[in-house]
Amino acid sequence: MSIKQAASLALKSIMGNKLRSFLTMLGIIIGVASVIILVSIVNGLTSNVVSIFDELGTNLITVNVGGRGSNRSVDPADMQKIVEENSDCLMYVSPSVAFMGTVKSDSDSLDNKTVTGVSEDFEKIRVLKIENGRFFTYMDVTNKNRVCVIGTYLQKELFDGQSAVGESIKINGKKFEVIGVLEEKASSESGSADDVIYLPYTIAQKMSWNGRVSMYYFSATDTDHSEQAVSKIKTELYKVFQNENAYTVMAMSEMIDQINEITGMMSTALAGIAGISLLVGGIGIMNIMLVSVTERTREIGIRKSLGATPWDIMSQFVVEAITTGALGGVLGIVLGVAASFAVTLFGVASKISFTAIAISFSFSVLIGIIFGYFPAKKAARLNPIEALRYD
Amino acid sequence: MTALVNLRNIYKIYGEGESEIHALDGMSLEVHEHEFVAIVGASGSGKSTCMNIIGCLDTPTSGEYFLNGTDVSTMNEKELAHIRNREIGFIFQQYNLIPKLTVLENVELPLIYRGISASERKKKAREALKRVGLSNRENKFPNQLSGGQQQRVSIARALAGNPPVILADEPTGALDSKTGKEVLEFLKELNRDGTTIILITHDNSIAEQTKRIVRISDGKIISDEVKEAQA
Image 1 (cartoon, each protein chain N blue to C red):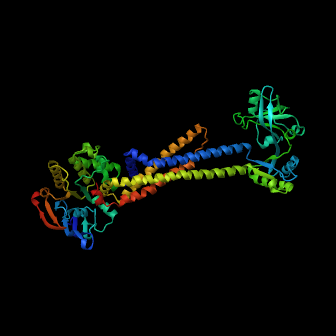
Image 2 (cartoon, helix red, strand yellow; image 1 turned 90 degrees about the vertical axis):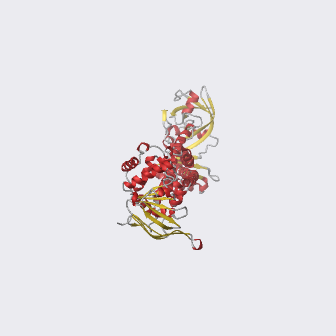
Image 3 (cartoon, chains in turn green, orange; image 1 turned 135 degrees about the horizontal axis):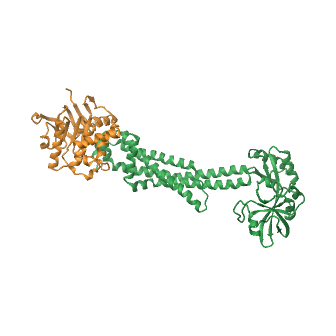
């Protein structure tokens, strides 16, 4: 008997008892679907997080300076020197001085806004795109010009969405000219990448309570040089502080790698847990197959008397178990993919993984083989004389 | 002429030692082509065991069995399956049709296991159904047919593979006397067309319809009479 005949026989047998076949497959369906859903959600989450970090620039290196003893900070000029001396791996540096402030236009006022003082190179480090106007220049920084660049959220709130370039705002009572508005990144929502104000750091130093620069942004020449750049910065900072705990240096590319590693582990663990239900589904298949073999004892006897070899009988039942597993797998994929799309409607990010689909489907077929084998073996071994007598 | 079925000193022993039962106790039998033999015996006489051995459903404990010139007494399960498939057509008391398959599919079964292509299979199965006069029922399921019709389907199934021997085990046992007679007439007709038939029964009146009666008791042949007048 050919595999094709065995498959059509199996389909006939499965279709002949739809409810039972469906219940048999249910474990596989749920197993495959949950593997796909879970992996999709973790994937969605990962790509969301990674894209946030990507937006910050994968070449970005952040340096936090906590300081030790009397030596609390490093001079921005010293940091600039590190970049100049290591131009093979470093491109730019910008200090970052942040403080909270009240921001006012003629008509509106916003409290508790984070105001960040940076250098002119910050635009390149963070790959900022200016929608309107310009970013501040080296001259603005050295001359401590009262200029600022704002995000679209502030333009929306303070100027009703009208162009803010050339207008003035008051930050903690001090008047600034808006010289640029950034491109919208996150639908102009509060607290998003559009809710930002950048000033020359020289002014920000004066406006923050201690004027200390505790953070620097560097950009590496490219992602491959990040590691080298990090170690260079660390070496230089160690020279200043003589203490490794005085600063932290972190490369974005390293962080993305870490995130990918963590979510990858999460995804595998969740898929493994969901995979257990596939195993349970397999036991369900075996259970029903054993019942089916007993029920069809007489049929097996008839087939044997007509010349079916043990192999013919065996392949009939194994193919039936595989078909059940595969059909359950296909239904599970349909359910899993549908559910993965459905969760996006509720705002949960999901990204369907074809690897998860392929692996869970192969696994369900494999389970059909493994758990179909034992009942099939039992059927193949039946004595035709006794099987024919069976009622 | 060599015998189609040639049993030589066949023993079939169940159990061991004290509780040993000789279901067949040194039985020898030859059946030639075109014969119509009835093997008659009461229940427990060993006729079922005899039929199982002739039908290659079982192997003897000792002795030789040549079927169509081949020694089948020492074959393994797979080889026996091939022999059953090619050399023997079974007709059972309970028809033994598979209820989920249509009449045509049931008749096709032995041909499927022989590995014959679908179109060839259907052609042969239809021919066999035509011979038993059930061409118009090929898409029915067994339970939609009467007992007599079901038995004719099982005869068609036995004929489909064109085996040299038809082995009928109480073929009229489940039928009323009128239908039983019809089935028997049909078997006679098949025999007249040249098919070798071995019929196993406990019923003398049925055995009388055949050309040769072999009586079994306690696993031994006690009489073997040929009634050439029938032929």
